[in-house]
Image (cartoon, rainbow, N blue to C red; front, top):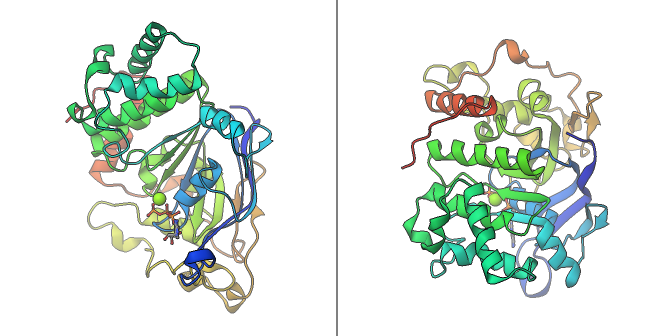
Length: 361
Ligand SMILES: Nc1ncnc2c1ncn2[C@@H]1O[C@H](COP(=O)(O)OP(=O)(O)OP(=O)(O)O)[C@@H](O)[C@H]1O
Ligand SMILES: [Mg+2]
């Protein structure tokens, strides 16, 4: 993996409401002052509880939303306010996979038409025959028979539909794909298949992946680096090993402790209590102080800036990180449910290059 940065955000902020015909709605501070760098060829994961701003961040990174403040740079170009031909070029280089493979594919179009459509836009030089060949190639790339081009979306299972969505995203030859919860609508056994497919594609095609998930188990074994969000801000960022095995932020520690565990093991571990506060009225200072077992009065006074805690770039935004005992790390990996164990076994086998047999529903 290179250290070449393909996507960068600086001071990225998005507020909703408070102006125009939404003037009466409360202002929602969905994303606040985010700085991150995604390196070419890596899989970068964004995790956090529902409502913490993951989808808003993804839409800002893709220029599906315009930022209230801050900047997004893709491949060296500021795309924060790009429009017109620049936007068409961006849509070719940066693609999106949707959460719901059922509603994101037009039911009246054949698979061939669905995958051929982006080709018509981004590769207009292809003849109809060349386009059909390319569609067949893309179907094979995502593990579907080329003959499926004549079928309609309803004739496929959820996992197969998500493969069609991926083939459609690949059609324009993107450099980067952003998946917002790309597998959370799928059965667990199918999730692993689709995750592994994305991993294979990223390796074979040199693609960069940005994956958003609230399920830490799903991303643990596929991501190179991870950003943890809380109430619109990144509270911890680092390699997957740093964040999962040496989490320094109390929120990350609590989030990891809430991964489903076998019966009887829950009591021993700290759990995240209480609701996430509303992003329209975030707590002062460190927004996590209302739920944090380590909070002191100073924590509600100022927003903590990210601090580098390792040479590799592991960073944590917590006033008290230096006083909080580091977890015991890999010596005591968190216990997992049987279902999660089975899923991780599939990931590991596939990562090791083994032929893995999955059950397609
Ligand atoms: N278009 C919008 N107008 C007003 N508020 C919005 C809009 N989009 C998102 N929000 C608010 O911004 C906050 C962050 O939402 P977002 O969808 O980014 O969260 P998320 O982390 O993706 O959540 P989930 O895990 O449930 O998908 C929420 O409080 C949401 O209600
Ligand atoms: Mg979302």
